[in-house]
Length: 153
Length: 224
Image (cartoon, rainbow over all chains, first blue to last red; front, top):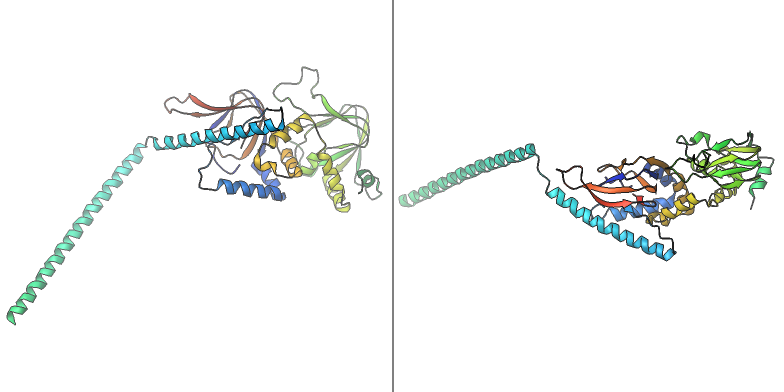
């Protein structure tokens, strides 16, 4: 609901009946209701931290009906379960991204770029050396001219 | 405080249109996909007659087993009662089917006239809206309980919660259908009503048919 992409597939194992609240309908209510605007701001402030975006975002079914306390306790346990699985999914996504095999054209491009950079570096180095040599020669000429002046004096 | 009855017996009120209803003629269907468009929003007041209210709770199995297309009535409405205000106030789909049990007479109030009445009589809108919270059928209660599980909905006013519930659309998916595809923009909140949803990922690109199951979600699970 905060404009994030789904990280996993949600497949119907059986025929499934759902109630859907589309974002555009949610927005219709949002424009009218201040309490909802405030709640959204609160959620956004929680999401827009430096923490990575959640990989899994669902709330478990909670069929505990023995007492309100038991219901709340199960909610707490379930939320911890989602957090735990979320952490695993985030790490897994990170590892998968790191181990992703490269694209051949991308690899060739990278190699060519590396070569070009190296060639550029070597050209630069040669130019620097020539400049240094030139400066040394000028310096030597100056010294010789000064020595000649001294001898003549 | 002015009562609803006194408002409608006021000589200034000429908004109500009388409609005679034939026996056993269903008025509103909760499951209709076309719903009620904004311009056609209206509600009914019962002048006389008996009407049954049906809320469909079973969406995966056909209801032909008990010999009727409509589910069992959750309640009956009689003279002086009203219905259809949720769809009218929130511009949403009808939440129940109302069927006449005998010959009855109804008065229809269109939204445009409802708004005029609300301007004229301060307490009118409040009185109508208060009635929305009186519905205690199984499905409404279940939806309210399940939505309470969402932290940022819990602190909302009853009216905002009710409007969000009214804006929800019910859908059915076949077995093996993809409810959400990986990479798809999450642009809706989904509450599982019946059936099982599997959350899974492909873990090896060389075995595209093999899935790693993260979770199986059942009735009452919320997918954000």
